[in-house]
Image (cartoon, rainbow, N blue to C red):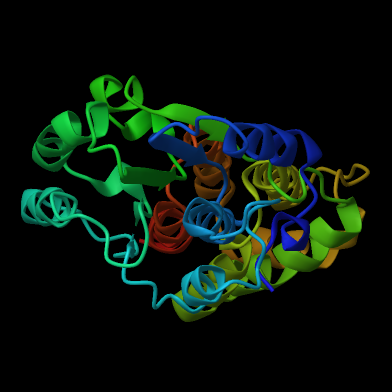
Length: 292
């Protein structure tokens, strides 16, 4: 049953949303967070709360509107999710046209736009007016993994709600389990193996990914020293086997270049770069650095 209690624990955000729903809820909000923070679930729950017919706590999860919203069949709920595809001006115009029509079932219409950072500048500009002065019945929920990619003119028209990732730390043991298949594939020169391992890393929340990349650098450092015949205690003992294999397969100069490239990735992650871009970099870019 759809409810705030069913969402991942985030008491401050839940309280803020519940308080806002009990009063005058902003008509345009921006939900931001990592890919693993449950943006879609939060957006659907907020949409259900706005459409809920209950006079008590919303969403009640039991009324017809809540059930329709949960199933994605509510006639006054539009959910736009084009994945990582660019959202173009024709889509923005369609959204504006739909919101010029009064609601069907109740007194509100809700539009959820996922991955709003993928709205191109023309589409964002086309939405400015309706986001700033929506009809009294229209509510907009934008979700973005990279909120800074949105035009400031769009962000200024939204009330921000930021989600914390469900997990912001990762242990050395967990990191080693994720990195070992990646390093094995890199040492073997298998680009398909790199892609598979990179896709597993893609699911890691941003803060944990920063830690992962730091540990990947440590393993590369161990490989560089091994390639140069330097006997020293490894920084990543759990990945010693992988570092040794890498030192035999790739020259120390290329390993150093790979080490420096991780600094580039760390900067991209810190700026909340798209997960698909990280996968591409971990696969094709590092394969090129090491072997081409």
